[in-house]
Length: 188
Image 1 (spheres, rainbow, N blue to C red):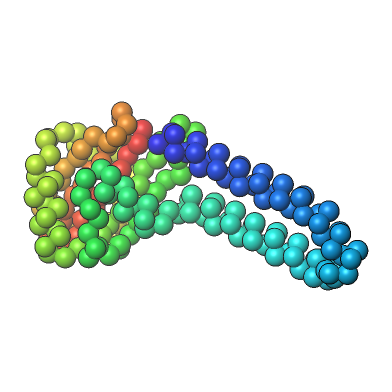
Image 2 (tube, rainbow, N blue to C red; image 1 turned 90 degrees about the horizontal axis):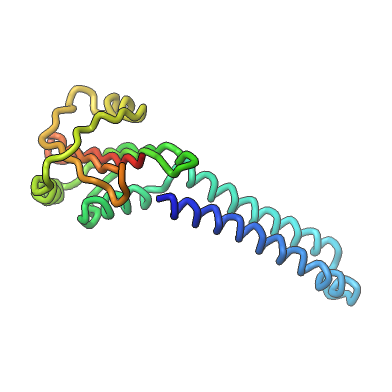
């Protein structure tokens, strides 16, 4: 995960440098086009504003998705850690993730509903995992899941598998309603 964070930071800085250089490189071209009459000053201003707006939108979107990951982030975590294709019937009821600290440590959690068939397929795979660590790592988002589920938080099966990195765990809980699944990834 630390490598992914490094790559993200490197790409973000690279995009900023490239867009800045592109903007600087257009200055002589724009001046030449203005002097030749092919570009008006008002259109030049519009181009600058559109360029700045596009850069800001991309920066804000990148920052927003860093703090509030998209559903594809949770889907890939599920697939990577369970080695099961994310169910097409899945509907997210809740998702949350902490922002990675300087060491790349974070926690993500999601509550999904799946079809009965997908639920039993996942259950059969998860039951084959060897017994391991109990989920003793609290994440404040679990309170929100408790609110969403109310009194129906009875687990049919709980399991944990070691993540790809040392000190990372993937917890999965299949609720006894036959359709709800909670999964949590902890990278410490």
